[in-house]
Image 1 (cartoon, protein in one colour):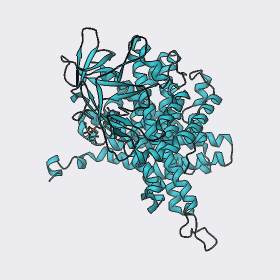
Image 2: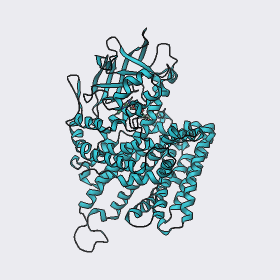
Image 3: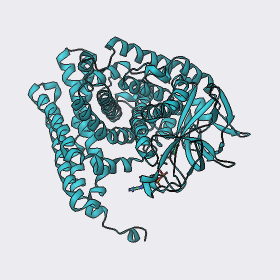
Image 4: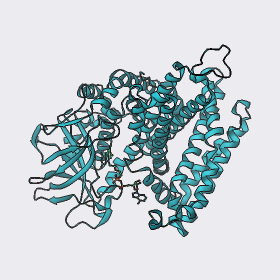
Length: 593
Ligand SMILES: Cc1cc2nc3c(=O)[nH]c(=O)nc-3n(C[C@H](O)[C@H](O)[C@H](O)COP(=O)(O)OP(=O)(O)OC[C@H]3O[C@@H](n4cnc5c(N)ncnc54)[C@H](O)[C@@H]3O)c2cc1C
């Protein structure tokens, strides 16, 4: 089933949830709506025509290590070259380095499309964008001049090297070593695992960003530095020089995203890999967080992407497949399964969760733009806090629903969903990594509760919840029969979020373990309340703009979300505030008895 970019849905979310018109009017984005739509449409064409046809072949062939070289699936290299030639690699990068300086909001929306069309391909630019961001914000002028133009043009790709066999979620445990040289460079020694696109032949060079520890570094996360380590050294005239001491030792066999090479990387097996410090010594994790925050939002968007793709797939199947007779069917013939109430509920769930997660991610992207582009310092600071608050929700809520929606997609296909031919199974397999990498969703929930809720003494979350309440009041005041009980249900969801947030604030002080036990359900509750409110904003706008099918769907989806999905919020609140004792009731020894 061919992919079609949901341009209208993306524009609707940008305009209603992310407030596109206001941002354009205030000159924050530097582009108009027509340009934004045109770029999204072009990204849609590229996704549908170039990336989508390679998705299944990529899954079946996978990337392989042959005679020490990583071979990507047939068509991959050509598609990557087309991607680079189309200028897609520099969408949001500064003009100074050859980019187009377009807003994050736009590259986030385009990212959904590439990942929907081909998740395993989309990962490569996703990581390169993050590396560009980190070098741009913290690299020396020399590093910027040497590496950014080629990375922005897509001639070279970027990677992110954090994970080691004994250091995954706990990066403080990493042991890769960096030794300073007399010429100011460093030599890197160590093994990194699970490195996405760690090696390939699609481009002439690969720029690795590697976390390592200096000999005299303090222990834990305060002793980590970040280094730029190119696969090939770069001569002073910019040409490719000698091979650096970095090799791909092996590729992992995985559940999904088979075409994305996941590499074990060896640094310094001979004299040490030449590395260049990015930012300051021992402050590497701070720089890496720049890259990780951008990547976390982008991975959240991968969740939206796979959910959208699975929904399109299931919808097409449900229209074709005939089984049983629906209660509303007149004749005795079998009905398309889309007519059955349970299938319609499943399809509505898929659409509603996808659109809610898309809205959360696009709002986070919009706040990123405000944090970087607004003139007013206070506005930039507030947006920076908002990005910090929303990033773990964008990442974890969206990737969780990516898995759930892909699973419902398999269910709608019945037995054929379990058979690889239909493609529904690939979405399900591909989706499963998303809640794990870029910081597991458990770690995102801990981040939300322990670092984000206390921001500005709790004011950041309080102001945000106040804004959600404001939208609920508008829904209630609108008094529209077609909204059903949307206002009431969302009111309950936002009240549940407010109560759970207050409880979290107290628990963090008095009983931190109880707070951690409730962190994941709290994040889910947050996503449901925020997503429901963003869909309601879309419904309010649709209601203001008139009637007809294009206006009816946002209202129907928002109402469904409020009446069928946001209803879980009060239960989640009970879990957060009252579930810790039973969660922690069995001690680890008893649990494993
Ligand atoms: C396909 C793939 C691609 C990847 N790409 C990259 C990449 O490009 N670069 C890179 O550096 N890494 C990459 N990774 C690594 C990935 O980011 C890690 O797997 C992830 O961060 C989790 O680390 P871990 O696997 O060591 O799990 P662990 O840290 O061992 O976690 C195991 C479980 O314990 C939980 N847990 C751990 N600590 C805590 C805690 N303090 N409190 C509560 N729960 C906890 C986790 O949530 C998880 O459920 C990739 C992994 C895969 C599989």
